[in-house]
Length: 320
Ligand code: NAP
Ligand code: G4F
Image (cartoon, rainbow, N blue to C red; front, top):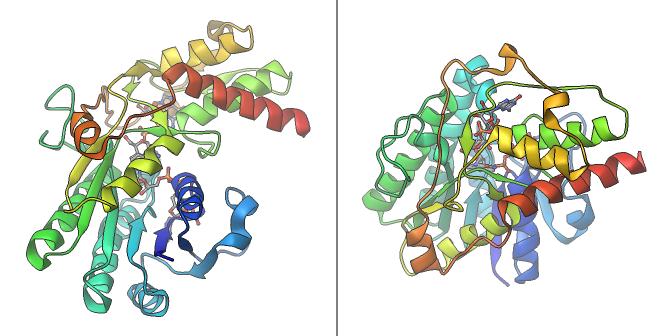
């Protein structure tokens, strides 16, 4: 039975990746940081099938000891301070977790067993003020937030350990991926939650920032399969993962509201509070390398993603 360690097990991607690895017969070790109350909401339905271990990307010793104890063949580093606006309020913490945390995990692997295969959760946010459209593995980076800067560090330290120590260190440059398990503060979930709240008479309006920002949005369940595929290749590499389509936040609103027979123009209010000090205006992937080498294709379309999220929030809010 192969053993995989997932950092960020309590997050959106950690929950989908764990499900996938369980289906494939892995022993899954999920790393969760200590908190005063447990936050297993996304993993509650399979928590008895995995092993949860306390660990923190800010603590080198915890990473070393969990590798020594569980002897994984694969490590998926999904943990991060992942919310872009927070990275302007807590830039040093974001750098410590999202950037230096990667080095701590790579160092732990190098000391314990350099043969462990390592996946780093890199981000399209690294492309930032894009220097090329669409963006591929060779597009130069121009990050626009402390989060994006930290992810650039995480990407290059992964490449550096691959080249310096011949480690199987792979970087997946993933474009935005969403799901009914997405955190409430991210724009897609904020919209799907508000649409259903408004439909059920529990909310009156939805306050948003830049409606013209464009993202290449896919379904998280599809993207974790790409992570796994990357670690099954003969050699470590960098891969861009996305749909190759881009849509504006406004379009997401249009589809989400019309799915429940409402017009977004009657409810969406633009609020400067949600504008960012520096914005990433246009992200669109060129995932042809992943298509060719990994034989990876996204299965869920943009419209299916929006309606899936609205339907899931409707079902949840109706239960409440
Ligand atoms: P998420 O839902 O925000 O999950 C982040 C996870 O990291 C949570 O489990 C969180 O734990 C954990 N974490 C935070 N700080 C930690 C620390 N110091 N030590 C250990 N764990 C810590 O993020 P996601 O959407 O699943 O994304 C997964 C990864 O992919 C992240 O690295 C993100 O930056 C990257 N990424 C995401 C996307 C996307 O569109 N979703 C795109 C590109 C890259 P708590 O539950 O305790 O907070
Ligand atoms: O949903 P968002 O907060 O995601 P963002 O900033 O693209 O970051 C996500 O995707 C990255 C991949 O590119 C990940 F690396 C990162 O960890 C995270 O998962 O915002 C999307 C867009 C932005 O342009 C933002 O300005 O939506 C715009 N937006 C407009 N109104 C808003 C809002 N974003 C949020 N969060 N809240 C709003 O009210």
